[in-house]
Image (tube, rainbow, N blue to C red):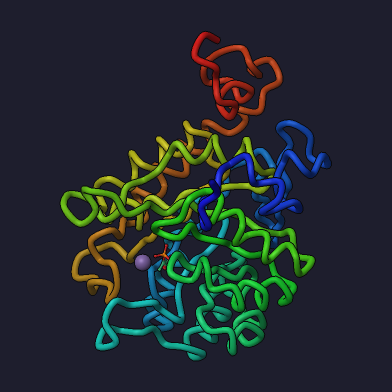
Length: 314
Ligand code: PEP
Ligand code: MN
């Protein structure tokens, strides 16, 4: 008996023939597609750190945070102009005005920027300003949006739906690839599970990192900010993500300093530039640790073993 809607990892070559490692031999057994965004190269052997505020609130705010993240050594800037908020009464972002601010800041710092697009009608507008388009967790299965984003000619950061299986996530990525755009970076940002909302916001699924690497050649990064929802957990979660083989991190940062205003959005998970600097230093200290040919398959943490399920008696 077959049940409609059941997907299994064995079905990936049918669900996503363009992106499944098994059905696309171009990248071999463990090659990664390098996705280039300005000077940042996802999957290029050096971890990419994207950092910035949850939302663009003003020119002054984003300029201050952008200078802080650049000084801390981040490679890219993040910041939402359109925010998917639980309540329509909460701050929704500055909209197109926020995009404008974001591009001014990019000119000032030289950092490429990623920003979320939520509305299929605004894809071209957002693509004019952004170096990379973010599809958020809530829109991971918005198929018309994925198709439009796939046609926009910009690299895409595809966040995992908060309740999405790996098959659903890679199926969503396939919609983008189907439009001819393979410049997709996957982002694990925590999934809903029993403790969500109790002592953490979501549950950071580190296990998915090696699974993604086994089943596709797309790079994967981790968002420790939304995954934990707690500023004090962001640094250890970042380190853990890197140890699991993440190709990068996307982190929410607020302006530090005495008397700095509280962010309008996700304040509890925002870290300051000094913590970001420690994370950046750690991350680059680990660069190459998983890519050394000598390490391949030579131990539990060698890349060869890390992303290959081990048989019980292996
Ligand atoms: C964000 O990155 O600003 C965001 C809203 O994340 P997510 O879609 O993962 O909730
Ligand atoms: Mn946020």
